[in-house]
Length: 533
Image (cartoon, rainbow, N blue to C red; front, side, top):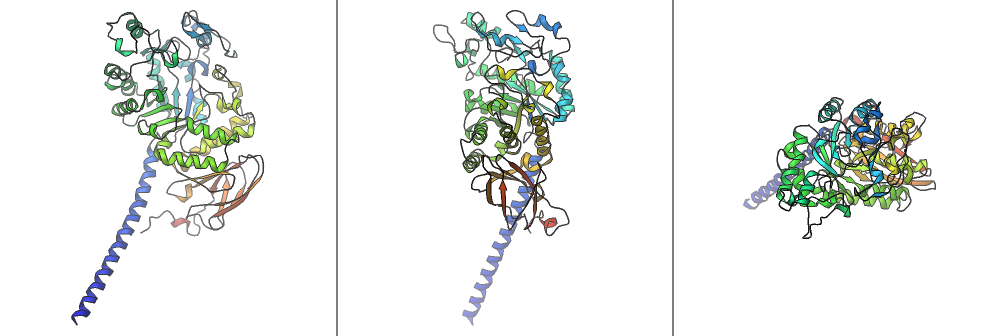
């Protein structure tokens, strides 16, 4: 009898133990689902994730009405072009000024002329404006800062900048300034004083050798490097509340900084810069310019200009790597760097320092593939002014030509496709802040973007080859039902899912942006977004 009681007790104990485990697992599963939902809500509300950026070179974006009246702002050796149709050409080195002559040629764009194009940018769907350097400088590119506090007179006044920022915010656009903190210009009073006087207050701001020579960035005499490891420089640039970096966030109310040549600044200093920016404005963003593998850089800044992603995109389209290999590389990068950081990084196809996309890729279908990937892969698309209309420009300074406003027309297929892709991206939450998952295939470049809702699932399937391919693709999404129709958002084509798989033929250089056609009420789908209890 005693033995029977012990057996019953043990059985009851084990049953209760198993029940407790089941309850715990159920609770944990519900918590995971709940946390996942919270995560996507958090991403949705974070303006820094998945925004559409527009890169602006003010001097070349929009011509003032009375450009002739601005000539006094460009004394010799500077030259002001009064014809917007003039093209920048390689010049000669001006030994006296330590710059090239094409760096001293201007087209006169400024805050006032830019302001008149805001309706164009709003209609295009732009959410963030990234301005090239706007501080007082000698050259047209203004990466040779004379004074961080003073706005370059050719662009306007400090008051005009503040007013422009207010106008952009009212229109729902954010403002990112170019932080050139690795070096200054040799025309800066701070540098001139330090060079002439070894006892100068600013002597430690720069890197001098014993013979009073100095280190210029990339050996450029016009760009003396700042000694960013020195405490006085750190306080001046970013540590103090009234430092350059913090004051523009606090007082002018900008939304973040793009950090020039961040790969030269280094991990430790970049971390300090990012923390200083967040102390001034908690939801500000620091974007580092890097030409490196993203992983470690995304531990010290909010996001990067993802030049590595650009290389992967171009290599795929140019046939240097296959679709599956490119997908493996994307998956590895995202795994190493973290999806949250990649979502805050900028995807660029071209910019101020590269050839324009239409000069790199010669064929229209190649440009189309690149545009689709820029607007559908994880990250924030950063559009270089004029690339949305197919502007060409090869070697420096050809890629910095004035904006081609004559190409802004609905007969321009590059422009109309870009507008359509931006609309699709802004309409689909998964493309802005969704997770990334590669789809296994033989040849294609195929991936899926997802949120916690099946209604927002998007599949991108691209054939980057010159031959038609036949694919059988597994769709690793449990909520997509048998016989669900997938509609291509770029065409009227549709495909049918069979038991979690997709079989389709893809013409050469074609790409589909597929979305499940789910009409509620439909079998099961109305209940698929519920948390499992």
